[in-house]
Image (cartoon, rainbow, N blue to C red; front, side):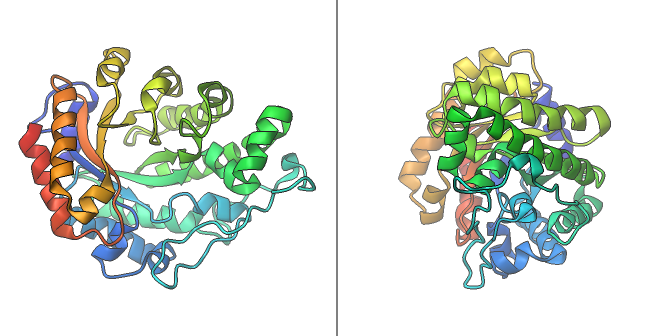
Amino acid sequence: MKSIERMQRVLKRQWADRRPFVPSIYEHGAAVIGETPGQTSRSADLMAAAAIESRRLYEHDIVSVGVDIYNIEAEAFGCEVSGGADGSIPGITSHPLAGPDAPDPADLPIPRPDGPNRLGLIAEASRRVVDQIGSDVWVYACMGGPFSQAVELRGFEDFIADICLAPERAHALLERTAELSLAHARRLCAQGCGVYLFESWATIPLIDPRIFGAFVVPYNKRVIDAVRAEFDVPPPAVVMGGDTAVLMDFFIEVGTSLVVADFNTDFEFMRDKIADRDMIIRGCADPKVIERGDWEALTGSVAALARKSAGIANFVWGCGCVPLDTPAENLLRFKDMCLAAGG
């Protein structure tokens, strides 16, 4: 069975030939092709090669395109990003809307997806990956979500202060980031790939469910509704860690196709919430444990996930962001452990 067929069945809560294996491979893909994250993140050739070669090596069931997945949209808006020349992962180094004297976010120019930025680069890389392997496996392009873009522009403390003291200012900024997100998502989906909206700045307990419902849901839903209505591509998803079980009603409202859950999550609660919905639960082990090869700890995590996911047809195996220097044999051993435990 092809990976694409496997995922289609699981999404519909049907059993496949085995449970899918869906690790999160971003900067690790650079290591797979012998490049640095900085170099890979700035080349459509390398970014596509990283995704394709990682798929060849690990044969995972969803391929994601991207390296520094939270930076691209924020950089287009004006955030500075480190180069990663020393082999480090590029990161945001400035918040252009920080401080009390920042300009009105309603006046923030919306970057052009075809402008002098990396928005077009990831679109081109995604197209190449879809062209080469999209008939066999779901391909997703990675985006920073509207809330996380706003945090990078304003800075976390200032943005939370706006939410509490000047909510109209926070919403004005989110309108701008959502506008770019929608335009960028449309361009990415036109390449034939799905989109992952990453919202780790919205993780519980960084914010509380009340804030999530008012300042995350409406803007992610706008993007996901448009993608679902306009494109026949792998179903869009909002991706984040933390205590996702407490946000299940919000994830249903947003329309995400996938929810991340670690081995401590209340799977029974999640299963009951989505019993009649096309939504995937991705059980996640700690990628740092995989990197260092702590097999005793990993055996316990895999056993817990297998026990909690028993009888859940729409469960897939996974892990958080695979660290750059994770030995390939470690990730392959983790895959074998997952499939042996309930594959």
